[in-house]
Length: 271
Image (tube, rainbow, N blue to C red):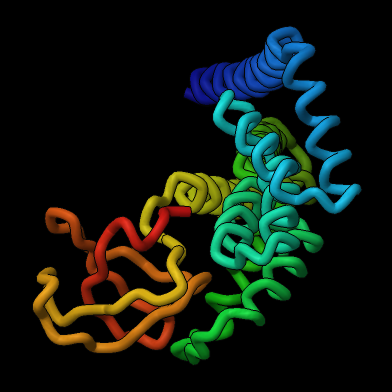
């Protein structure tokens, strides 16, 4: 029985090692393919956009950055630069939108967070957040330290460590080593579960389509999805909302203080 367990553990460890290697190889291959597929024209557009931005020609920079983005070459740096260009061009809503998109790809980037905070300070809507349990805030900040891929690799490391320590527990004859193997397995297994949860949480945030930004100068929030419905309150450009429902050309939204209502879908843009 013990031999069967040991063989099973070795098999799982080997599979984890292969999986980690395949992940690394696929990442490296993807990067190589991306580098090969980058055209000279896109490189020139990037240089031209940066030059236009430095020279204060923000509209040209925006046009060039958007052209690169439409070519499918989205990245943290591109969204960040685009947010900066829109902010300089006094297009507050689009700057906030692109800062949020950049932050989704790099949640731990302090430069993006700072610029987003500066931009949001210029919005007209002052909305108080519903108080959140401090532990939830702390956990969210913790899993924003790294991206989903990094948390995934770390979780595999802890899984291998847990299985290796379990082998120490099974094979060791000395009581001290058996205790080390047992408690080490428990700790590594706990860390594996935690890092896996963080990886899933980061992945879900990236894929989330419920957050949006109000784009026009003002947008009326209605009591129902009808143009003739009562106006509950007004929102202004740059305010972030959560979408909870859709009906025809309307979206039900909730703001940070818990107020909700319906707004025309073309007046908000999904982050």
